Amino acid sequence: MTDWSTLSDACGSGSAEHVPALLDRFESDPSGAWSELMDHLCPQLDTAFSASFAALPRLAELAAGCGTEDRRWVPCIPNS
Image (cartoon, rainbow, N blue to C red; front, top):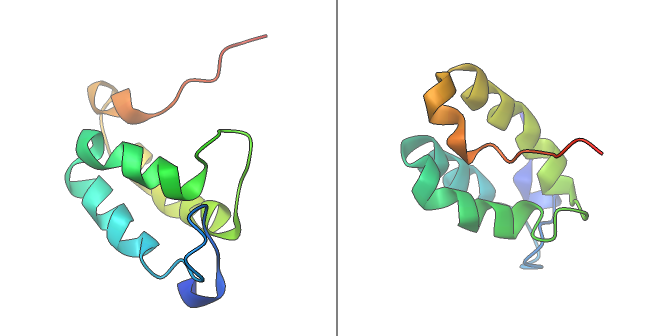
């Protein structure tokens, strides 16, 4: 089990204890919570925090459980 209180996010609030609630909100309403979630986990898309890595298994689980149409919130990484 993840101890979110020992992790940090982009907002620098001292801990990432609020991230599980953001992930729950994201599960309920992906398009409504994606922006806020990304603000906390990787706001500049090139910087990650300990909470960013800890959230990956849950995000992967959510992505695996939804259909192709529901994956609109998944950011695309262009081929270079």
